[in-house]
Image (cartoon, rainbow, N blue to C red; front, side, top):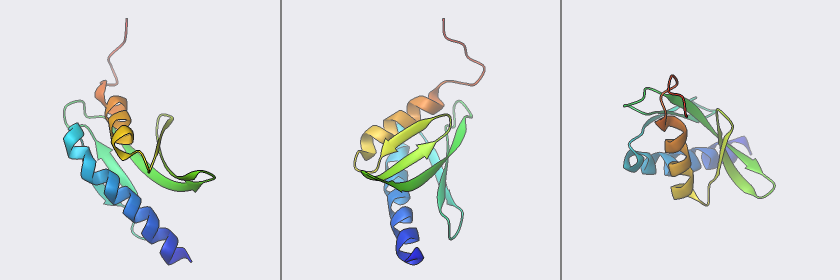
Length: 94
């Protein structure tokens, strides 16, 4: 069972990773048997770790600070992730 679960998680993370260069983001799969996606924004230097986990409504992605996206909405999820990493940590909104 865990092999299927891990394989499915990895497939979702790989599908998201394929879209990230279009958003100007770079990623790398980490975690071995417990895969996660390390994502960073080359211009802002911001980074986060993406987790894929099953939920009642299907698989979802989770990332800090408080980000969430659905695996069946990969383009929307990639855009939300870019917006999360767009703003440099020292920038303040007016």
